[in-house]
Image (cartoon, rainbow, N blue to C red; front, side, top):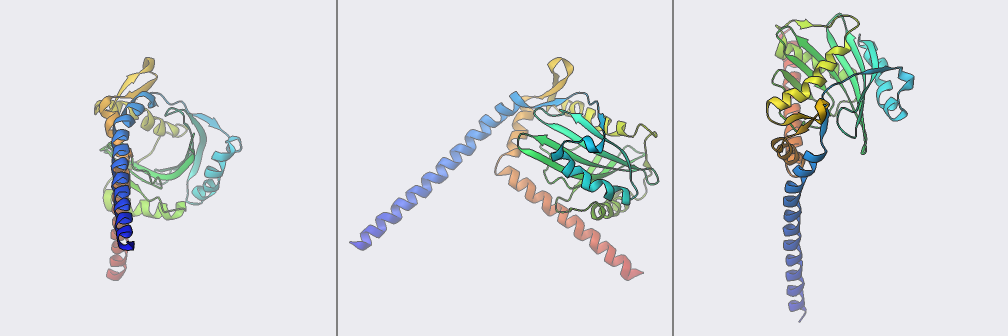
Amino acid sequence: MQHKRGIAASTRLQLMLDNFWLDAAGVIGLLHVVGPMAMRNTYRFAARCTPLQVAPAELPTPVAVRILPHMKQMETLGFALVGCYDLGELAIHTKSYVAYFCNPATNDFANVTAVVSPRGVGSYFEFSTRFSNGTVLETNTNGVPPLTPGNPDVRVFRFAEITEPQELFVLHHQLLEKYAGELWPVGETKGLEIQRLVRVLENYGPRHAKIGYMVLADGGGFYRLTWKGAFLMAWRGLLPASLIRQALERQAMRAERRALDGGGVAALQKA
């Protein structure tokens, strides 16, 4: 009798597990249909960016705690503060702030960015170098892979595990030497350095419109998603695709760091 009860319990457990996976698959399938519809109806990106310069002491407290600790570190690395800016609502229901820096001796740029959304405050710091042939190399601590294709003229490396600007800056210059050692870095007109960031942000919508992800709407003030953009972005952001993409990104960045470390060791041995 006990043996029969054990078999019955095992059967019930198996049925529960089967039902769980069926329900989970149904929920994921539904999200892959509903998600794009919701994203298309809600996502907007500003067509224009008008930075409002603010004093560091005037930054909102949740933003200040993300930005201010890194400002002195950037200056120690040879960067001069261009200014702190309120970038406004670039994407709907968000507010973006940036501390922007320039190193006129090397034509490197840096920024510490914080984005306020209903989910909280996210932040990262970044080093960026633009070259005379129009290409750009960026190194940052933003651990979230983009949901859209990257700009073919911009090579981006993401190291979310790094917490100190100095460590990232060393990596940035190792990557410059590896991928752009023969190229000439270019700067910006003194006093207009922030326009470099403005150009990047204002090119976001037109670039995605060109590849069919967005269209200009709302009287020319914002870009909204096409159905193509909504489906592809939503699917990339949902499970399991989001976890797979993050894992592949981390693996690629770990491999890049190992290659750089190996090159440094080889150079020392050769010397």
